[in-house]
Image 1 (cartoon, one colour):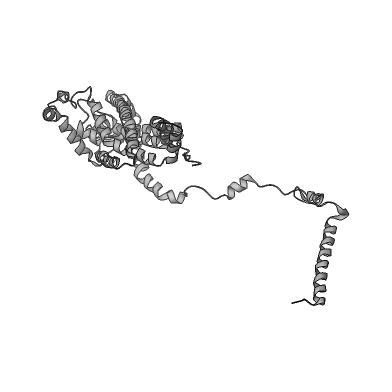
Image 2: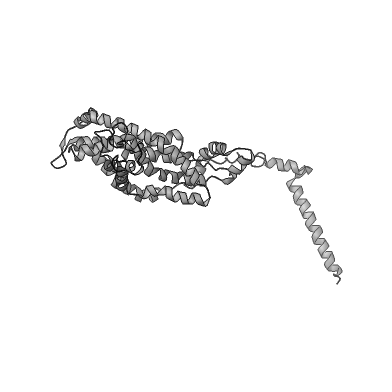
Amino acid sequence: MQVPMSKRKTAGGAVAGSDASARGTAGEENPGGAPPGAAAAEFTGGGRRGSGPTAPGPNPAAERARAPRQGPSVVMALPALVVFGAFALLPLGGVAVLSFVQWDGLGSPQWAGLEKWAATLSDPATLHAMWLTVVYVVASYVLQAPAALLLGVFMAGRQRYRAVLSVLYFLPLIFSSAAVAITFQSLLDPNFGLARALHSDFFQRDWLGDPDIALFVVVFVVSWCFIPFHSLLYQAGVRQIPASMYEAATLDGAGRLKQFWYITLPQLRYTIVTSSTLMLVGSLTYFDLIYVLTGGGPGTSTRILPLHMYELGFRSYHMGQASAVACILAVVGLVMAVVLNRVSGAATMESQQAGL
C-alpha cells in the first residue's frame, strides 16, 4: 500500500523540522561551536562555571545517626534483667549486708562493721580452705579441659558407632550428684568395693580416707560427671567448622594432627573460652557431690570454700563470716570470667568464618 505524496511530505518535513530544532537547541547550549566535551567540563565539580559553591559531601556522623540500630533492643532484654535482678542481684546484695552483721540465724542481727571480715580473713581454717579451692580448681581444669576437647572432637565424627558412644558418654551428666557420690563411696570402699570384687591390691587403698589423695579423688569424680557436658559443647563447635577447610588441608598434604592444630583448635577459640569459663567458675561453687562423698573430710582435706561456707553458716551459726566467704566466691568468680573474656578477645565475638 502506497502512502500519499502529501503525507510523505508532511512526514519528511516533520523529521527535518525536528532535526533542525535539535541542531538549534544544541547551538544555543553550546555557543561558538565549542566541542561538547568543553560544555560538559563546565558542569564538572557540581555546577556551571561561575556558579555558587559546590554542595557539601555526605556527613558520616549524620549517616551513622540515621543508620538502623543494630543488636537487641533494651526493651526485649528488660524481662530477663528484671528476673536477674530479683533472683541474683538482690540476694547478693543481702548477702553483702549480712557480711557486716553479727547474726546466728535466729535472733536479731547486730551491726559489726568490718569485724566479721577481719575474723574471716584471719581464720586459719578459711585460709586453708582457700588454698584447697585453688588446688581443686586448677586440678579440675587440667583434667577436664583436654579430656573434654578430645572427646568432643571424637564425638563430632559422622560414623554411627561414634553416635552410640556419644550417648554412653553423656550418661554421667544426667545422674543425680547424690547417687554418683554414694556409688563411688561404695566402689572405692577398701572392704567391699572394687578391691573385693576384682581382688586387686591397687583398690585396697582407702582412697577417700587418705588425706593426701582424697582431694584428687574428688576431682576425678567431679570431672567424670561434667566432662560429658563440655564434650557436648566441643562436639557442636567442631560440627560448625566447614568441611571445605579440611578438604583444602588434605589436598595440601596436611595430616590429622596438623589439621587439628591449625584448623580445629583456632576455629574452637570461642568454644574453648566458654567452656573454660563455665569450668573454672563452676568449680568455685561446687558443693553437693563433695558434701555427700566426703563431707569435707577426712579432717579438712577436702573442705573447699563452698563447704567451709556451709560449715560456718549452718553448723557454727556464724552467718556474718559465712556471708563474707560467699562474697569472696562471687567476686573471684566474676573476676575470673571477666579476665578470661578480656584476655581471649571473646568480648568482640567476631565471626571466624568470614569469607567462607
